[in-house]
Image (cartoon, rainbow, N blue to C red):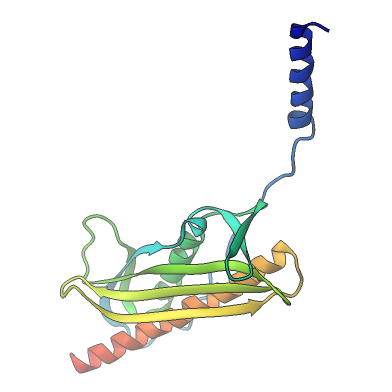
Length: 203
């Protein structure tokens, strides 16, 4: 077989390996919006801005992550989030804060936004944890920044593991969803309590 015939044969072989199988389809997942809490009867006349949620690089993209031991982190090739976990956290937090009725308004921080208070934070963990049992770990840090004084006036840390019923990605996603829901609601409740106390001191 001459050189040209060999190259053609190799090309067709590569095409067959890469093209004919079609590959596994990628499955996409998302977190559900939390159920709306009962509206507050003591709304604070405060417009609230929600700013940037930072995260490790692995959580700024779409792959679903898993942790093995203390130092090893991997991602599933064919299972991805519909949008980055940081964005899911931000949207869910805004949804719960709006539905709480505790604030005059809740909007995303943008260039030129007016408002004294900004909620911002960091998502540290949003992953499956493998060990003797499987769990879904969510860790986040949120703070309230006063743009007028340049000070952080409130902060909240949440870190919990949710048991996973079976070692399937869909079960891990459901556990992460439940865990995120709980963490967001705890943070929203804490913010509401902070402003209620602050307004009572400074009517």
